[in-house]
Length: 589
Image (cartoon, rainbow, N blue to C red; front, side):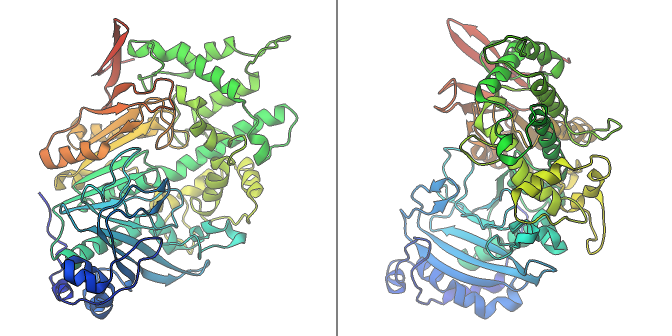
């Protein structure tokens, strides 16, 4: 099944030398070298790995300037910090950390690609590349998270590698240039963020597999969401031989264009404040809608579209069919009238929502990104967190992350806005969708490629990935406020057309009704995409549906529902109070 192009036989001598090691950092406990030698060869091999690589690397390494700063044995049962809190107890494994490909940036200091790898004692001969997120700049925990509530890849027996995409938020930071987003001003750092760090880290992962185990992996899997999903698409499109299977969840395949939509939405929401006579500020954006008003938006959407899938169950499974034409009359029913005392929607709020769901356009009406579907999840905190910010919570991510990134990373030449987040808001509000939007495709020295070439991963030429035998699964929330599921569906439809109607043989998109960005929302958002991908890759069992269930924080806790491979949707029928679902391809509409 696998290609065998990354066997590093020259690493074999490294397996024969043992050395003592200190305790692991970050709360991870290592056994002493003497105890390791007495009990097992792998712990001792791990303890000596850094020293042995330092002695042998120059001639053998697949990457330039490899520096291994740590190789420590981690005892079974250790918990480590993750983005979601403390991990589950981990199996015994070798932890390896370091960096490579260091270069002096044009601005922002010295850049390098940082990595972390965990090699389990009970290895299943599978390799897992853990995708990043946001603007990256932080080395992932390398435990192999793969969806809410799912067993970590490391605990399943995978060797796992993670990286920071070529910049470090702690050291590559400059207040005058949006702090940690300064990497966008350096051409090599921007390319590394977009894709160039990926094949290097992948090659290093295989190098370390052979150095530690004496053999390469039999199966290679990538899993990532958001920016991590973009990285999965980069592998499928640019480096198609790297992986047998990829889960690219909520993929930022059109990141620069999606950043245009973030600016568009910020301008739309600011119009609400201006109509009230308020000055748009980051704090004021949080007041654009109350939670009760967003509940009216959800009510309107359900009233217009809930039954399109055959059953009124609080889920709009007919993704893409819930249009403004259907929803607008329901919104108008809830519009504020003279003398209205109950909660209602201001006319300017309805106008803003309609404008946002249409997606960004230039002055001639040309779309600059996809439209967004109407969906119940627009009332969830995971939607507001991006669009307006949360009351008594973080500010709008569309402004602080999206605005800062559009100025620093996704346009050429990049624009320095300073450290004050209000400057990012002011810049977004002044953004011109005719002249400024073109800058995502611009090339200007010292940049020899555009931001779209560096970061955009929306190619529909997956012929090499398909020829390699690769399989691609793309789940995405219908209420994702930052990457439109309609953009992802549009990409798949073009891919299917160019593949002669056979794209489903190697790539499948799974819309998740109600789900926000990478999770959350009133949705059956708990599902095990990794196990589904494994069956497709190893057993050739293609998934027509992914079993999913709703969490306790939803309006329908515990509900089970299939996530259907597009173009199928989950149609429901109710009998004796029980709803039964099946995946059905809807008639053209």
